[in-house]
Length: 389
Image 1 (tube, helix red, strand yellow):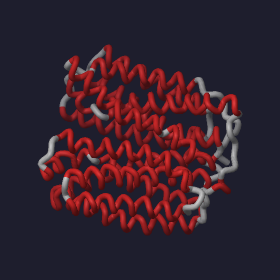
Image 2: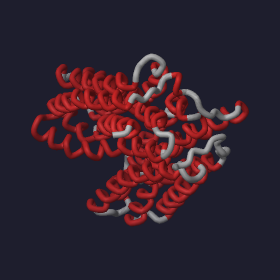
Image 3: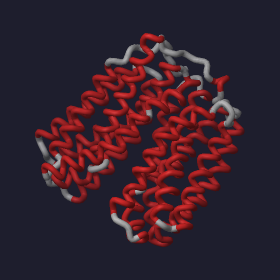
Image 4: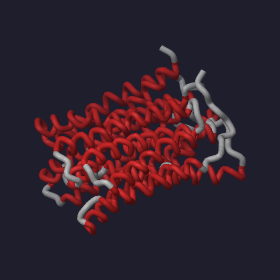
């Protein structure tokens, strides 16, 4: 098996396994009952994880110089396992905050950063596609984990489920580390060669990509976080509400892969404009015509756009800054996602509480998507073009 393939397998195992973080909603109510806590107190676990994820994305590239990828890959899973064991064995709310929220969140940042960096260094062609696959597996991990977590809660309880997840991560640590070691990929200073935008455009590129991710993620998370509620409020049946939620998740995964593949072929700005603009128009349509079928259609478009943004931005960083710098630069740009993740779903909820419906929240998401499309369209052409062989 070729070394790039081994790197890709290790990276997708990393993001797919750690992506189970996004199935936390399955554990929310069972943990609330187990810990006898308020819903807000248990919900804070995911907020802590999102914050820790963002911090870890910024800090992980600092250790590329001395830590081998195999060590970091295995370490990410071991840190996740340790966090879940702390949460499950102590079994108190503060322990869950620390173990699941902080330690598991930090592990996600390490794995996500290393996975993206490793495939960009290992693959000299098809970088966009492989980056798209790695980030798509993060979304896919939540989809795969959801039914398993439901089964775990039914048979083991919420704390027992966390304990079982820790066991899986211990095994995954060995497999991912072995695959990465066999690939012989290096992500240290020797891999840092590559193009860098000229000084006069460097800050412009950074802030435009930051805005694209912040605004695109805000639009997507406002929809994703309230998908079932939006459909129900415009008169949709429970079946349509479930379809709307599933279509957002499916669109998210498909958008990540497709956008990564497209970055190998066409300019980043055209990808962002062509996917975010229809999503914005779809949300404007929903705000004007609040009908169930329109809701499902517009949320599917937004799911695609959210996934495409998540797949395009890291691939674009590789094009503008060079494959060796993707971890460091994307880690800084990823703070945009952290800000959106902490504020956008809450802001949509506030708008719902004030107005009694999701009309203003949908309109706000549409404006965010429109501004993200315009920010993407303003990107200059990269100094290097990576095209598939």
